[in-house]
Image 1: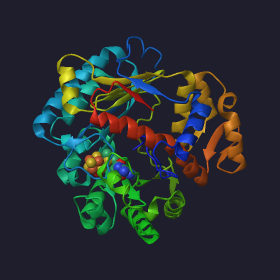
Image 2: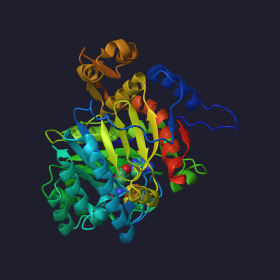
Image 3: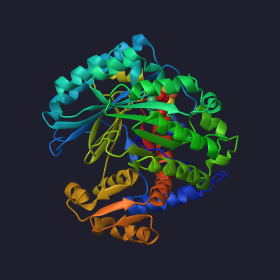
Image 4: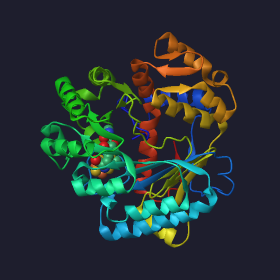
Length: 447
Ligand SMILES: C[S@@+](CC[C@H](N)C(=O)[O-])C[C@H]1O[C@@H](n2cnc3c(N)ncnc32)[C@H](O)[C@@H]1O
Ligand code: SF4
């Protein structure tokens, strides 16, 4: 899940009207990297004609905003699954695909990621129709990555998922101790979820990724270690281990204000991640993003792999060179817009070249390695002339290794630079997603 996520760092108790350390640092960093202090998204549908002409290859993201239950920690846009709403949603997504197909033309689509919510709620209930429509409308040159819920992974459903063309499957396991599963309100036992993992691993996908959350309230280092070892012995291809992020607009986020948890500190989380690093490196996995470890030789499971992407569905975001836009979050508004023949875009922002470069760097740091030639190819400028002076001190502190062409973050660098990135991402997600979940057509969101 490569949406903007992260730990909430160094959050200081904020007095009325005062500026927190986070705010201060965030302002300095945004100015330094992106050349401006604030970014404002406006209620405006951007002119799309001609926007795709510069795009060589495109990723597609499809959002399925339905779940069978709502988890208290989850920041994503979702609502309870209702078959009659899902039917309307499937038709609306097909309308949206049609609206974009002429604009995109025969440009190759080299990545399709189906996320949620819970995409598997639509298996046998319209997902097949959407995928078929996508393959007819666009020049598809890729396999499918999809998220799933362990309770939707019976043998028959796994067969259906494979016949959709899904080669890379991710499942939200979250924890492997009963007390943590209960606290997260996950609707299965440890034995049940382990059996689901075994079925998925045995089904013949190219990559099975398992999501787990660590630094749960009251979780011990021994429990983190036990979960890591268990996943290795279950034979999963990839593990995405996220620390518990607390978003103020979720049920858990509202409670967190009242309770203080020892596992929320950045040093404690680093210690837990180090336990996982040792286990996965020892078992032949390599780091493929800040939070993901992939078995060597296996193609990694990840969200959209192309820097430019088009989002379909409620709350899906799109990024095309110099513009970012976001669909309305509310499913009923999304459906009625498309029924009226209108694109469901709620907010957009034109991005200066400096902002695009800062965004590029943000995701490359998330992936923990990048080549400077990729920056040159995208922007026609030398990486070092734009960001070089920011990188040099980081190599002094061994947070990264720069051989002149490839930059690779060390384990410590991956963690600490991401803690810095979270100064932006947690706040941005809270404002943008939290705000958009309350108001389907906001006038303006300032990040
Ligand atoms: C869309 S969900 C996965 C698919 C499916 N809906 C499920 O829950 O099994 C994406 C993943 O994000 C992670 N996630 C969600 N909320 C989180 C939070 N507050 N902190 C850390 N990770 C979180 C979880 O690991 C979750 O599996
Ligand atoms: S964690 Fe998954 S199942 Fe739970 S609410 Fe979020 S998307 Fe839905």
